[in-house]
Each structure stands twice: as structure tokens, then as C-alpha cells.
Image (cartoon, rainbow, N blue to C red; front, side, top):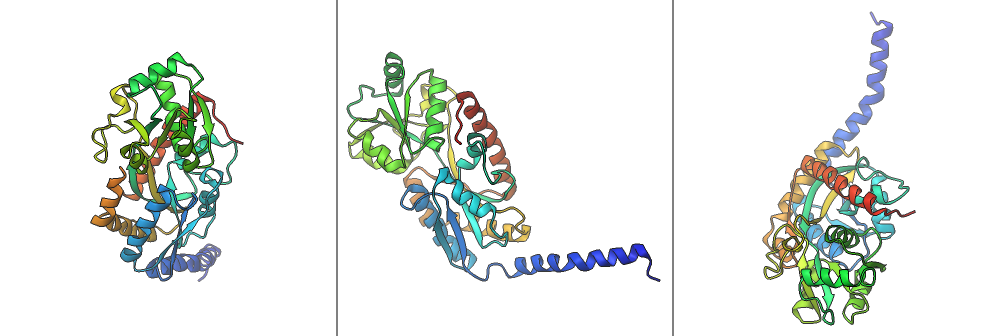
Length: 324
């Protein structure tokens, strides 16, 4: 006999079963068409370069083309938002950057949540920033630069690729911990900022290891790195922490999918990323520019993002930084 309670249960099952079956079918057949890897930064920079290296190897490990789509702008928020609101079917994923740790605290309003609207897949790499100064700078060490800045409070110009960017926040933390004041000059990207550093129009710039080629060729001077230990890519460059105890910044890149992506797809994607990051050719190219391949579990990435978000939220709040 069909009671009212059993009828309601059967009706609910009939409603939800198709969606459950659909998600299961998606997971079983994924991937069966090209995957779009969204890079929330313009083409040509180190983030884009690394994403293309990962996409090439990921295409092999997953057996489907992984296509790069650059959707730069608004401090990575355009690309981040695009993925956050994409269909959670595993075919639109994000090459995320450390901006996900800071944008929630930095921007007054966002149309996505950096911590709730993504399914973590895997870390890709961690890397330090390097502190560059023009050859005309009187500072040849981090200690000398700090003394120079203290003798000229607010007069030295620190360049960045934009307010709230990784280099900018790294510089802000450096100023806080070294007890110095500098004037911030935000640029529209790393290239124009570095172009102004070479002739001395700005006094310092924190950039990635790809820029070490300029110090090696004698065009600029590198004073230190932001990592906890010296980078194998530049073992002769001291850490800033050797002068400013406790100072440490490691930026990062990672893969995320939209929230509600089926867990089985996330697991398959994670396995593909881990396998791709183990390819010697990719590892070698990363390490030449001070990037360390750092695969992780989805849970590990989620925990890492939470801890990094807490760190940068505190820095941003203490510095009074906000972007409308």
C-alpha cells in the first residue's frame, strides 16, 4: 500500500535522481572534450608562461586538449569571476594566483567568494619575489637599502604591477617589518614598472625569478629574496629575512574548479596535475626561474588558501588598503 509518506519519498527520488545520474555520468566520461584553463592575467607574463607549460603536460596526462584562455583585468577578478560562475562540469578551470588570498579583504565588493566559489584541485608552484634596485642606487645590500629609506622617509618610490598585486603586498609587508616609508607607484603590469626601474625612475621593485636575467646581465641589482631560504635558482642572493628576521613571502599558483564540481572530476583532475608536475622538462623550466613545483591534495590546497587568506587579510587591514 502506498502511503502519503512513501509517495512523497518516491516523488523526491524521481526529482533528484536525474541530476545525480547526470553528475555521475559527467564524472564517468570526463574529460571527453577540450578543457579551458582560464588565466586571469594578460598573456606574456610569467604566470601565463607557467600556465602554458602546465596546460601542455596536462593535455597529455588527461588525454584532452587543455586550452589557455587569458581573461586579465581588475586585479585578476575578471578571470576569477568567470570561473566562479562557470558550469561546474570540469571543462572550465582556473589557473589561480595568490590574489585569491588577498582580494576578499582588498576589494570593497566582489561578485564571487575567493574561498567559497571554488573547488580546490592542486597547488602548482610556490615562488619567492626578488628585491631589485637600479644600478644607480647607493644600496648594495638590504641593510643599506633600509638605511637609505630611513634617511629619506617617503621619498623613495617602490613600483608594483598594480595596487594589491602580489609584489605590492610583498613590498607593504617589507615596509611594515623594516619600519620604513616609501611612496607606492602602481603600474599597469610588471613590464612598464621594470622598464622604469632600470634607469632609476623608481627606487625598487619586487619581482619574480624570471627577472633575474636582468641582474645577471648587469642591467639592475638584486638585493634579496622574500623566501624563507635562499633560492636554488640564485643561491648567492641572500634572503631578506637574513636582515629582517621573520620576513617571509612565498607567492603561489594553483588549479581551481568551480564549486560544486563533482568530487570524482576533482580527483581525476588532481591526479592529472600531480602527474604533469612530475615531468622533468616542466620541473627544470620552473626551477630555472625560482618556481618550485608543489603539487598537493585538494584538501591541502584548501587549507593552504585559508591560512594564506588570514595572513594577507591582516596585512591589508593594518595598511588600510582598499579598492572600490
